Length: 334
Image (cartoon, rainbow, N blue to C red; front, side, top):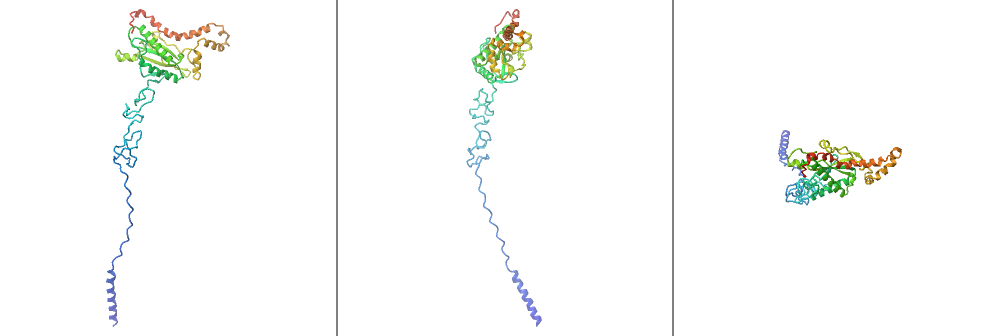
């Protein structure tokens, strides 16, 4: 009987187990809701990297990254950024150089006149009437530029204006013509406000050729005017003047004359005082007074004009060329 009860209890336990296994599994936990997708970026219709959100001012054309605004989404109207729009810019890929010479063409032009190596360098020719010392009207603006450079730079205290020519006709005639041309340039510059005591003229004929050739191009190179700075900021520069060939012909340039301005700071006042030649010896007398011998020497005033004469004898420097009339009597005036 007890065995039967145990068996019944065991059977009852076995019957319960299938009922527990038949229960359904618990549902999985709910997944979190994903965040909403970000809004789409503003469109960029021309794909130039400048968005069509009001930033791109030219939605139908690509930004080229050039001035004046490299981020406005437009092609540049001024690629070189010199202030000239492409239609008016003769050199759209090169910026204008402001130098008071053709400043309205948008090109990086070389200035007509510049200062370089103790020279007022002319990048344009002073044009003369053929065979004469008359300056062509086309060169008046160039002369004005030269005068302005000298007036703007009072530290340039003395220059030599030297004219050169190609080999035409006799030595004597060519030297005389170049001297007259240099005189004409000096006269023009003084007329434009440059102090006369800062300038002197010289003519070296064909002796100092820059091109030894006989072509028209060589002749054109040899017809020129050079302006060499002889005194700068109170100091003589020692710049090379003339050439060996001219010197052997007796055209040796003189030094800076006594009438030229001296001293960097007082250049302007001294220049104006130096103009009256008589005032110079008078001003010099107090300095010469301690050595008593200097005052009685009446030669001292006489020596002063004589000192000025080397500058005047510069024209007379052509006289050695006058010694050649024997060779040059068939003077072809070119």
